[in-house]
Length: 427
Image (cartoon, rainbow, N blue to C red; front, side, top):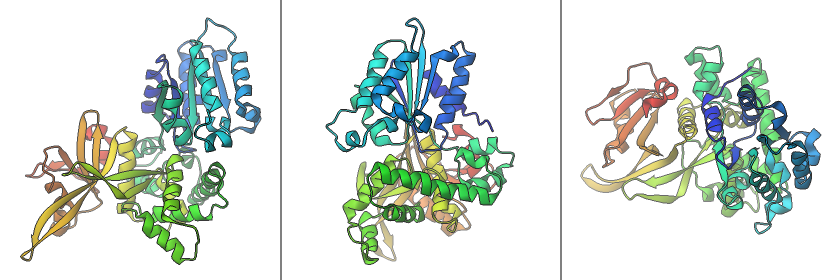
């Protein structure tokens, strides 16, 4: 099945000739390799690039294991760049395989791969694209190593819109499938629910957990797997590392301290398995360091971790909206609004939560996610935080249901879920 991903293709095409190393990051199996080796390669071939000018190196393939040695990799590429008057496109898939454990462990040790790629870039006739599934070594450090010549492109699993248009389902059936099985492209290839479920369970155990153990030199996968399940059960809720640590200790798990929990969560973020939404004081305009929220990059993987038992559609919907906003290239925080209220004659200070504070180049939006608003009490609950925000930026409540978007007297917009997910101009 061919799944066109035009937005990502446009990003890749727009960066041709910018003189930078294009770093394509994202969780494993999200479609990075297919996008680069198939869709982008086909584009180049149809726009005049010779086939021998596209050098493809999938480092996660055992047939290419010798090229995981950076010097062998350098020799291989130079042997294929035979003409100085031609432009070459170099695709290195899962480039972290060419970074040694010693280089990963020692922050002061230069990473040989980065030096080789920078040297190739200086030749002037190389367009370099590398993919990776670890942000620590292929994203956060890359600007320093490449001296601002690294250009990040984040690839997410299929959005609901991509999933819906690639499937033969109507949007309601596509939604039911999507919130259960998620958006990893291969899910659409698997036939039958059991096969899809087994595929996701196998990925969690044999790919993601195995990678985490190997990459971070863990003795076992049991503790980090248990933490993944805790976070999977907590989507949409603030996470307290100290409380998680106390739970582990009460279950007679020694050595799982609060710093260890924070370190493990960092590993999950680096592998793009979860994403953090920081808590932001809207009135005070400052970040609150404790109790961030974490969302799963793919809800199908989240469900598989929990053996498909916890299917709270309201929480999964919030996770999907978060992923949608991140996929659109926006910055997303969780808002907190502190307000003095009077209840039964007593004055007290209360915190109201805004699900998402969204910032983009020319955008600031406050968004509440509500699967259903069944009565006036629920309506007031959802609007309490938005009505407490003292500025005039756009405020949106995204809900389930099939209705025309509308706006109340306070200027708060109500938008049906499918309109929001399928129409990017809603923001």
